[in-house]
Length: 205
Image (cartoon, rainbow, N blue to C red; front, side, top):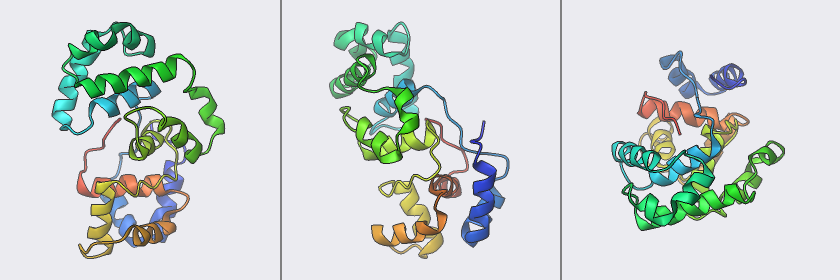
C-alpha cells in the first residue's frame, strides 16, 4: 500500500519540477511499498551488502531456513555456528548478532521511532555494527516511509540527477543538495522516482 502522502507529493513535485513531472507520468500505478518488519528489513540490508541482488536472495533464503524464525531471539539462539551454516561471511554473522542484540535488549525500540525525527533514528541505527548512514536512510524510506529523506551518498540517485539535470556531467554534493531543495518536503518521493528512471522495477527492502 502506498503511503498516505503519496498522491499529494506526486502533485507537488510535478508542479515544481518538469523533469520529475515527466518521470512521474511515465511510471503510473506504482508507488513506494514496504515489507513492514523492522528487524527483517535491517537484516536483509546486512545480508545484501556487497553482493548481487540474486546472490542476496539466495543467502537470505538459506539464512531464514537456518533459524526458527527471522526474529531477534531466534538469531541469538542460532549463534555464530548456526548462522555460519547459511553461507554468511564471518563479518555478516557478527553484524546480524549485533543487530539481534540491539533489538532483544531494547536498545532499538521501534515504538519510540514515531516520536523521533529522521536524524535521531539514524543516530540510533548506526550504533549497530554493519549499519551506516546509507543503510539507515534506506530504512527510513522503505520501512518507516519517511517522506523527506535525501540519500546524497546513493549512487543511483547521483547517476539519475547527473543524467536528468546536468547532461551527464559530474555534480558536487552541494549542487545535488541545491537541486533537491525544490523537492522539500518530498525528497524521498523524488528520489524514488529518479530511481525508477534508471530501473522501472521498484525495489523492496
